[in-house]
Amino acid sequence: MLLNEFPPIHDSVFELRIIINAESESDLMSFSFFKPSRPKTPQEVVKAIKDSLMALDTKTVVEVKALEKALEEVEKNISSLRGMLSGDGEVEPNADQAVQLALEFCKEDVISLVIHKLHILGWEARKDLLHCWSILLKQKVGETYCCVQYFEEHFELLDSLVVCYDNKEIALHCGSMLRECIKFPSLAKYILESACFELFFKFVELPNFDVASDAFSTFKDLLTKHDSVVSEFLTSHYSEFFDVYERLLTSSNYVTRRQSLKLLSDFLLEPPNSHIMKKFILEVRYLKVIMTLLKDSSRNIQISAFHIFKIFVANPNKPQEVKIILARNHEKLLELLNNLSPGKGSEDDQFEEEKELIIEEIQKMSGLKNLEH
Image 1 (cartoon, rainbow, N blue to C red):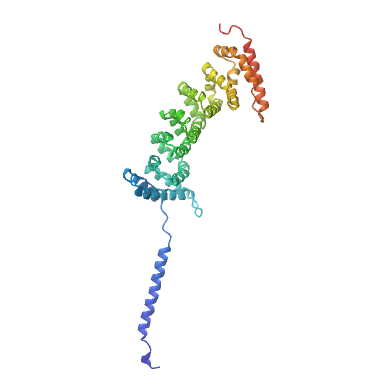
Image 2: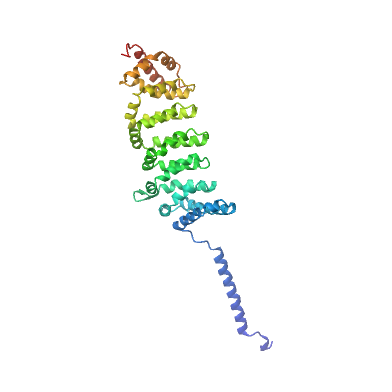
């Protein structure tokens, strides 16, 4: 082979460089394409949620396609929040990030936005939001729960959550959010003393069973979660509270009567409320209500009524009016009590012992003369 038949060396080198460079660029493009995106910071996640919630304005809501797109964006962003707070199965949640998320939620007023836009959100977004809600409320900076502090500075948001029971589409979601808030004494205290508290007496009798039951669960938490808060409230609002509570005890709705009677027993017998109980059992009007419930067609209600009735009877300082009522009705009361049985159960013996003591006390009352003088 002649020398001039070989390709020029410089041409081959040039072609080789082209091939190598082309492959390198291809690898670089491939690497860039598959490289995972940088994780969002808490600030970016919260800003994205805020922006997507803000996009749910009046104009967007009335345009179907625009609304669907905006709701998808909210759902995606709240899902990111859930992943950051709870982990995604591969990455564990970061405690510092959770605190930062809570701080940003407060700083950017996203808590307020969430409450006011809740009725527009889709089911999946609401579900994820409820999961995140309790986690956010528990985040502390030092000794301060930052989201709780936010509510303390914006108490009107608790009123907004309460009135949501009037909207059956979001009533159960708001109920869950409220019960998480009520775990904190300052927030429970506000609701008890606010004008919206009286709405619960309506909500627990709503025709929708699920909503009414949920409202009663929240109502019960308000009256049982924090002994000192409840005691202070009942002391300050005794007359107003029991005036409306009597309506529940005399309701035509069986579930309302049963639940409210059981709840009454629960909070009256708490040691911090002993002074409330002592005041309650001095009043003839409430004795009459409980005696009526002793005659209820439901045995469960009769048993619950007995546990309050026995306190009236066992009271060593019964006022004259109470003695008169017991004496006048002793025959009917004795008949009711003799026929009263809790059924089969481990508490039978204790119940029977208490019943016998109350029967004996009523028999003593029946022997008293000239009670009305």
